[in-house]
Length: 333
Image (cartoon, rainbow, N blue to C red; front, top):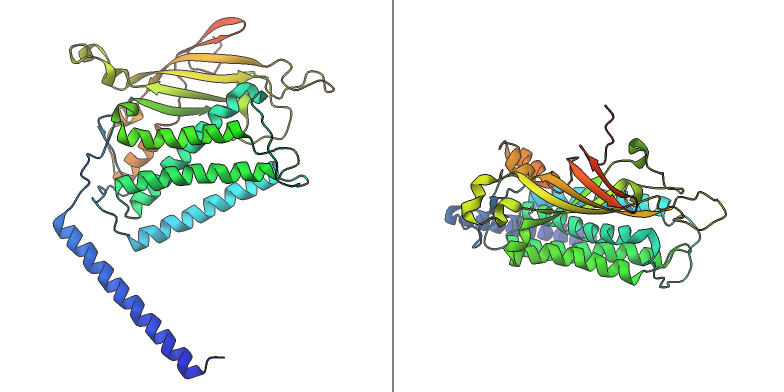
């Protein structure tokens, strides 16, 4: 057992080390601020100026910002904890069993695979934003963001692997990797930034579609979800034709499903009336449509550019084609 004198001495030593580390870090930050070193690559996305949470341009090398890192760490902890509670109550609440694999490629008309890809992508994106705010360079933030995006999705798959009603699905994991990998690829291949994954969620009962016949969350309510790839037409047009196209107007292609996990006959199999839907839609680039504002407002606008807003669209399914003025909302005149 430590004597009180030794204990106090060790506390004093730890305190002095903390002061020394803080002073050294402050000096490094001051030197970097004076040098104004910025990223060697332009801070852009699809040719447009990107913004960080606080409006600062990432430094060329990683230098931790203590207070932002603590803030991000707190938000990160709360978010992961909240997701765990949600998953435990909705997906892992039944009896557990030994780890096992269970392929589910045929379920949900593969709409869930697009969900896994978007989950890997969006998790990597949000992690990257928090790491940039904490002081990481743009390249490091991309790498660690992609690694975390895949790691978190793998953790979810592993949790499914211990659930009696589920299993670790190899195809789900592959699509998790595709989403995180595409996020990282956009950094090294800027032309891919002209193709942005987007997610649309509007509860199915609000637009006259069958509701999933099981407990649901917004993460696995596939009848209410459509996944899109938004194409930046303006950037892809030859220079001489750009004057004929509105810069903020894009085109998106989407995929979803109807009547997934909907049982007309309670004793029959799931997906009895399910059908695929393919969507060709106009889209808007919010970073070009909404005027600049304070850094935080610009950052929120940038994040929401991954959400697909209702626009004129044509849906194709097994019954034919149908036009929507504001997809998927049915407007009756």
